Length: 79
Image (cartoon, rainbow, N blue to C red; front, side, top):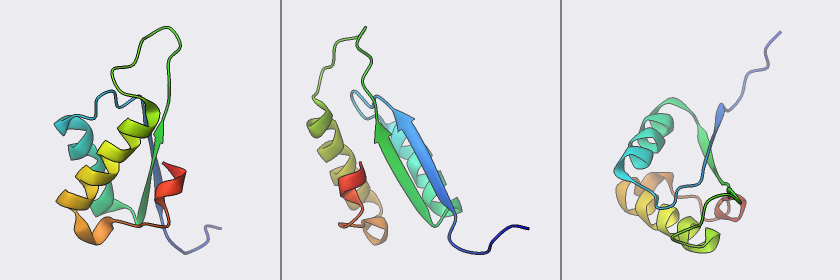
């Protein structure tokens, strides 16, 4: 039996850099799920243009600008 409650999504990628395509997927997920968690990964075989913290901040800033109601300052530590 499925428990009722909030639905959550996990979107994983390198996001280096975050693109309009990434943001489109986040936007669609926000309209479908109650919470969307973005996991930034690093591939040791590829170099990064931006550090993980820079990528995180770009994602937070973009999501806050595009979907202000979706910004969860308490949840950004998990990015």
